Amino acid sequence: MKTITQIRSALLLLLIILSTALLAFAASLFHGATGQAKSNDSPAGPTPLSGPSGKFGPVVETVLAAPGSDKPARILDLETGRVLVQPSLEHFNSQADAIMAWIRSNGLDISCNVWSNGAACVTYDMTVVAVDGKCWQEPTEAKLLDNSALAPRRHSPRRLLVLGPNRPDTYIFRTGEGNVGMLRIDGLSDDGGGVKIRYKLINPPASLTVARSL
Image 1 (tube, rainbow, N blue to C red):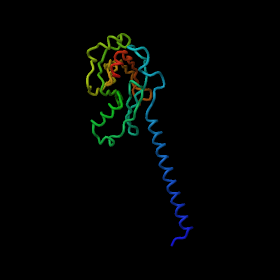
Image 2: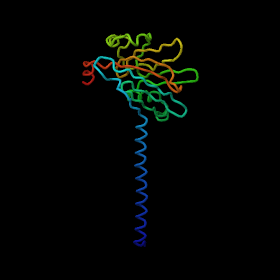
Image 3: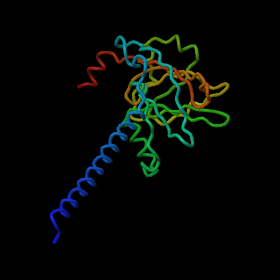
Image 4: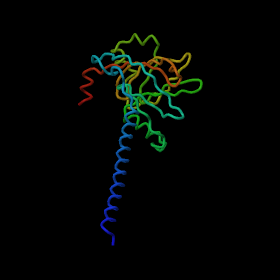
């Protein structure tokens, strides 16, 4: 039979093992939460949808970082300025519809791709129409909101907005959430690892905001 000392020693060892396991579990939760927070970038300036109802919010300038061999795709939510890192293809079992479902569920709108001799922005579930560059300063909010080309639709196909000579650089758009705005592509980032864009959104008219909340 085991002596009391042996039993106490066994219990002490068990407590040490359990304590170590609990500490490891707590550490994994902490690092997981930290990693998730770091994967989401919050806008440093004013939010895109701010200001008077039915009027353009502030112009937002940002860089869409391109994916690389050692970094995943990062996709921007135009309404909030938030960026999410897309999970690996294995996470979605390499199914395109599962990826799009994740993008839509998070309200994400645009990313970019850069290659050796070019780059393009990629839009998701957005209605996008190319316009003349001078339109960036010209159109009124009413003209955009009444533009039939931006009429609401259930889903819009993915679009490639390619950078380059004789390519459009200014667009009007409606996001999957129904918000209307303008986008301008300013070219590659200074380090060549992404695309510089600026955009502005029209704050939803009060009547539309009330209708969406019902």
